[in-house]
Amino acid sequence: MPHNDQRIFSIFAPKKMKDHRALQARMFDEIRDRRLFEKAESYGLDFLEKVFDRPVYPTEEALRELAHFDEDFPEKTGNAHAILDFLHRYGSPATVAQVGGRYFGFVNGSVVPAGLAAKNLSLFWDQNTAMQV
Image (cartoon, rainbow, N blue to C red; front, side, top):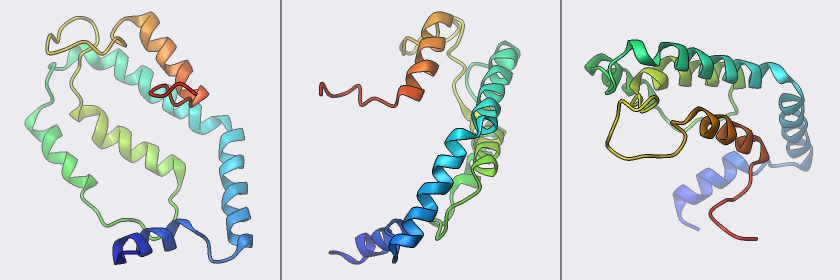
């Protein structure tokens, strides 16, 4: 196994099964706690509410702020709420505002309200839609 693969494996593969069970329990707790998903929904609705007040293409400042994502690979798990806050703060402003028919580069399908809502629902299903199983 190459050096980088060993490092990644050591981060994600717990040294003891006890560690694995603790991580799994934490993930299950986060899934059961609706606050994280409610926060994500709130951030999404906030984005939709403000999307028509911003340019279609991100500002130069928003693009510069993407530098916050240039960081070392984490050695430990992070706080899910802090990660979501970080993504919204620096990611949302740097997106192309293709909602509402103002962007004609290409169509993803979620720019129609029903499509966007259906896409949100399908995210929770977590299916591998690229493959027929």
